[in-house]
Image (cartoon, rainbow, N blue to C red; front, side):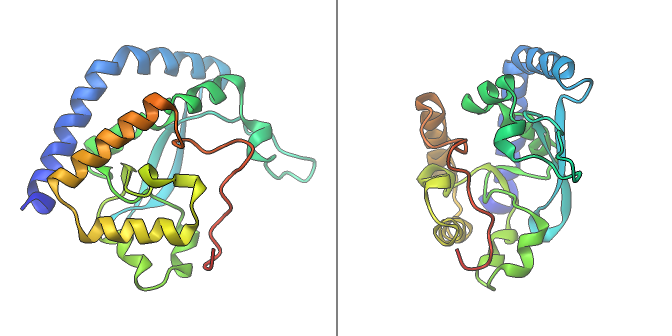
Length: 201
C-alpha cells in the first residue's frame, strides 16, 4: 500500500512544502546562475526512470561548456565554476530535482538515476533498480556514495528496492539531512571523482 499509493502522496506533499519554504533561495541562486551562465541557470539531461522510461533530470548548472581544441568538453574539475563549487558544497545543485518529484518522474528516496549508457552493462539483478522511481537521495547515498564501489552501490540500491517502507524512507531522509548539514560524503569530491561504470567495478 505504501509503495503503490502513499509514497507518491508523501513525495508530492514534502517536495511542494520544501519548494515553498526555500523558494527565495531557489530564486536567488537561479538569478546568480542566469547571470553567470549567460541565460542558462539549469542543466537538463535525459536519464532512465522507473521501467527505464526516459525523463529529463533538472539540476542547477554548476559547470561551463568550455571545450578543448578538438571540440571535446574539458574535464569536470576545469569547468566547475567558483559559484558552482559553492553550490555543490551545500548540495544546492540537486534542489531543482524537487520539480522532477512533483511531476512524478522521481521520488524523494530511491536509487539515483544514472545514464542510459550503463543499462546494457547491468546484470539482471542490477536492472531491478529500475523497478521503482529514481530518487534525489537513496540508501547508497547515505552509505558512502562516491567512497564505495559501483558493485556496493548497486547492492544497496537493490536492498532498498526489496525493502521499501515508510520508516525506511524517513530514515534515509533524516540521514541525508544530517549528512548535508555535516557536509559528509554527499557531493562528489573534486579531487576524487567517481569513475564511470564499466560493468565490473
